Image 1 (cartoon, rainbow, N blue to C red):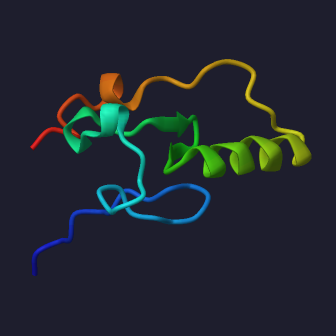
Image 2 (image 1 turned 120 degrees about the horizontal axis):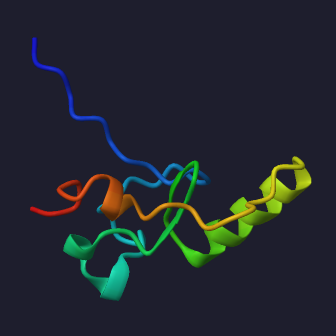
Amino acid sequence: MLARTPRILCVECQTPLGTPGFATQAGRPENGPAYWSDEGLVCSNACAARHVTRRAAEGRPMREPAANPLERSPGLFRR
């Protein structure tokens, strides 16, 4: 049996990467996501704000910028 490729989801609303509404850099999916954190990708500015608010309420604020996911997995967003 073939294993499915895991879907990449927004950490806040579970929207899959590549669907309409998932913000990408310069509006082009091949450029990768526009927002991310150390916990994963975030699909929009609204989800990014919710993510920051939730983490602050949990006592886990971001202390430094998260690593760029394109630098960690360069072929991940290219087709």
